[in-house]
Structure formats: structure tokens, C-alpha cells
Length: 82
Image (cartoon, rainbow, N blue to C red; front, side, top):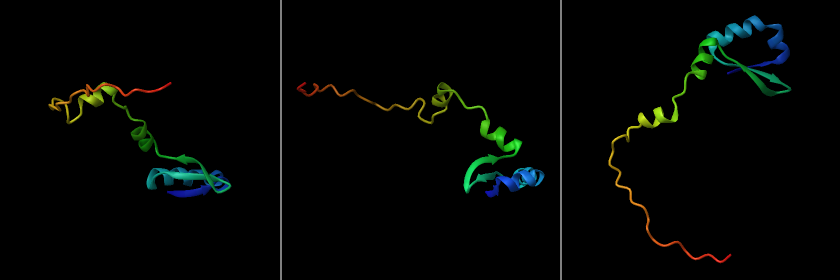
């Protein structure tokens, strides 16, 4: 990822946008720290994409229908002094 100082990003904004579309995400730094990242519209849509609901996620699990044979521990709880 290429890093741009904020003053360079402002002065060469068109180049920054072309680089984001062609080369991938572009970091913008202020005082040496990355404060923003410019990404192409395609990359943004991919990242933002629809996330499955928890139910859809669990139904897509490779363990659906597997017989796991899980038993509950029926031992008595330990004594605790309060």
C-alpha cells in the first residue's frame, strides 16, 4: 500500500484516485500516522458486501447434520464459601 502525505494527496488528488483504482488501497498520512485509506469503488463494494445472518452462517456450516454425540456433565457443583 502506497502512503501519501496529506499535502501530496491534496495536490495530486487525481493521481491518488487513479492509483487507488489501478494499484489498490492508498494510505493518507498526517504527521507520519495513517489517518485514512482511499480504495476503489469496486474494492469498497466488495468489502461492504452483504454479510450472512447468523442463521444463514450456521446453516452453511459443514457440521450441519453431523451427529456430535454431546452429553451434559451431570456431576454436582463444587461447594463455595461466600
